[in-house]
Image 1 (cartoon, rainbow, N blue to C red):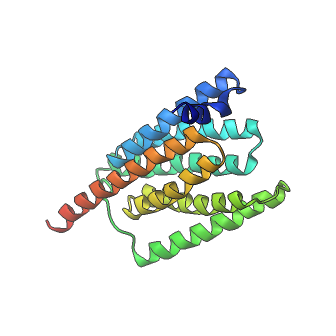
Image 2: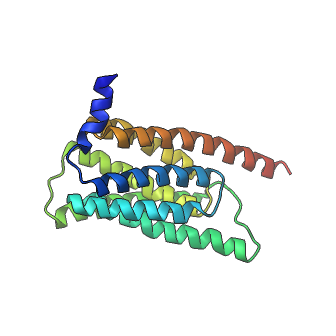
Length: 209
């Protein structure tokens, strides 16, 4: 047990207090955002926006410019999702949960591929060496980018992509020695599975009416 605690806490021994506090805040806000998304609550976006903006800043300070760029995208997509969900609430036409059409699947795959190309470009622009773990990062980024877009459209497939991406991220961060971040993605995975089940139930009720 002591070894596990040490593994979780060792990466933070030399970190400044403000960075630890901010990372703890993003941990809580990130989980809160996923829980709110599970309930299709519009607050999922402002809460998630704060979490990703803080994360982008922390990554910038740490010099992880590629990962920082990913979180900037998440921040911008939070604004987009907030706008889409808020707009439908204002005009009374609340966007319903639905499945992706063939055209949206093609668009989602295109976004996935574009994300990978862009992130490779970011690594090249900053002359950063791409390690094996970075390739996995790039893959999960493509999944997460597409999931964010599907979530803004309230497509149930967003949860499938989150689940796959989260399951990949858990061993990746554990391998990197980032135990607390790996633990957060375990929670994300569990919440995403529950969210998928809830959205599927709502979708079934809608189609049987």
